[in-house]
Length: 88
Image 1 (spheres, rainbow, N blue to C red):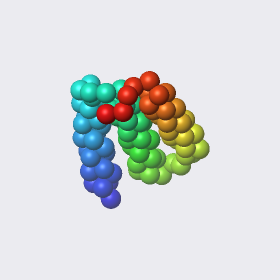
Image 2: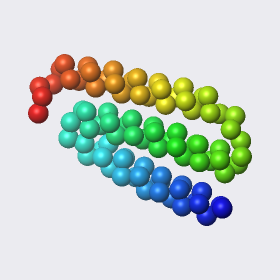
Image 3: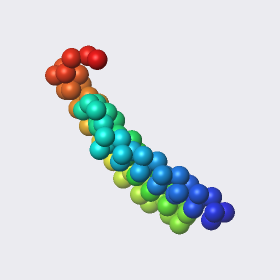
Image 4: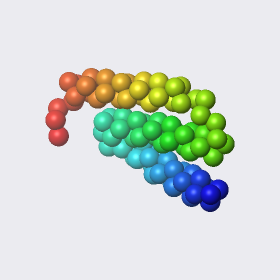
């Protein structure tokens, strides 16, 4: 069963590297906002996998609050950018 967690962590790390590349090479501000949101989601997912591996679910409420805060921040930033930049 441990190999499932290791494969999952490997895939999450690979996705994280791709998101960092997109963050650094994003053409528009919206690309960067979405990449930061996806990166936060990957961090939450990796933490959930680590909690499953350890069998400890004590941080679920904290992770849910963190994910909700990241989502609200991304939506707010996207709405501000939408009003500032012309549509492409």
